[in-house]
Amino acid sequence: MPQPNMQQMMKQVQKMQADMAKAQEELKSATVTATAGGGMVTVTVTGDQQVTAIEIKPEAIDPDDPELLQDLVLAAVNEGLRSSQEMAANKMGGLTGGMDLGSLGLPGM
Figure 1 (cartoon, one colour):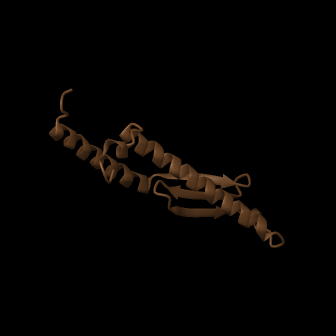
Figure 2: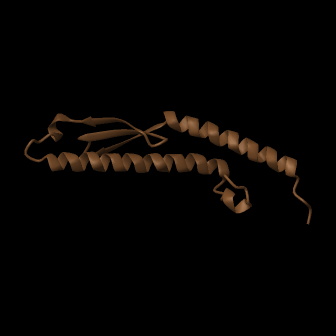
Figure 3: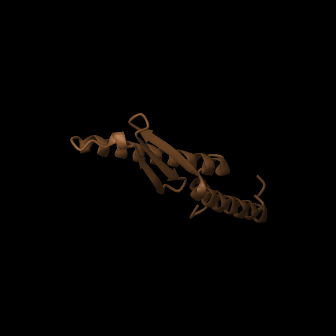
């Protein structure tokens, strides 16, 4: 069984690390939006899971039912975070080909 070319392997790992760093920077500016209550609450989340905006339509504000608004905001934020995580996983997974780098014995990957 031939020995793997360590220099070539290190170049590949370095390129993958550079690509991943670039993808992480791109995720900071990529956004997803999520809504709840038929669009009464809209949340914008970046690819690195930062909530950047919450829009609440006036008709969602019922002083007699604050729990409804709380539930709508919570639902929209959770959906936004889930979508953001999915976007990040797709972008990062595409770089590694779904490979578990830890299984290669490469610590810190």
